[in-house]
Length: 323
Image (cartoon, rainbow, N blue to C red; front, side, top):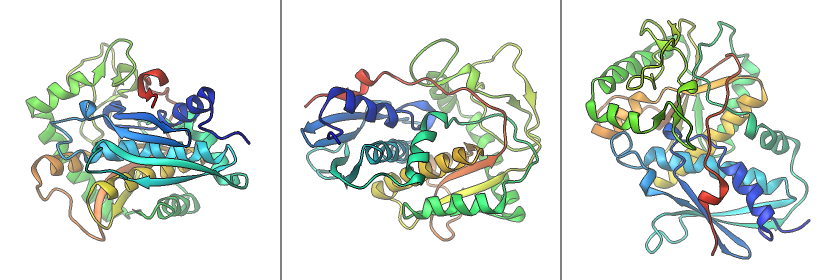
């Protein structure tokens, strides 16, 4: 089969898959560059980092890691195997997060093909979930997806879930009272048409605070006629953990996060993130989230929700640069 980097059409196909990844506040903090005829580079875009919510750049790296997983899957379905070198030139190219090459390989596995097919179907679901539980077999498959990337996905029981939700609620209240946070949230939410940020139609209902403490993206942008909901159904939570807590761990966690989300999509399971305690921790280095078996990088909410539209994306030409 033709080399996936050989033509503009091939590169466009790969980058289209990559930019469908989720990112913090839909900032899409990535750029792609054709290094040479056989190399594609993934760069961070520091101008899209959230200085208030993400001062360490942890969420930026997770976002780019999710894009990297999509890129790997897109290469696999071309009949090639991606060779990824993370942080190949950290001193001279600090924004370069990964360099990818592609070598011929047997056809992609059925799992990889189905995960690739799920990329355009995966959408963050900020709607209330039903009381239907996520089956044990599906939960085990989600945990296995994280392990495939060298990351642990803990699936807490009722008592730990209640404790985590209390931490999320406390952190959510702290953020909602912070003027700098609200100003940054305003910059990355939108009532009109743009290629990034969280649009008004993806806010979901306004939470009352009596149930699951989902993030309210409409705090600084009131939407006339917006529904209100208690978010009463207790979800299945997932806690994504790494052994260490540096840029390489964050990039790895982002790849695991996306593999978990695509696996959930493949099984008809909805998902969104409850990362408020991690945001508070990153800002203040405070003890919001206890360290247990590792460093928590994401808290996920799984369940069964209604279909939701996807958030917008910037065009390929805005993020793909030639050598």
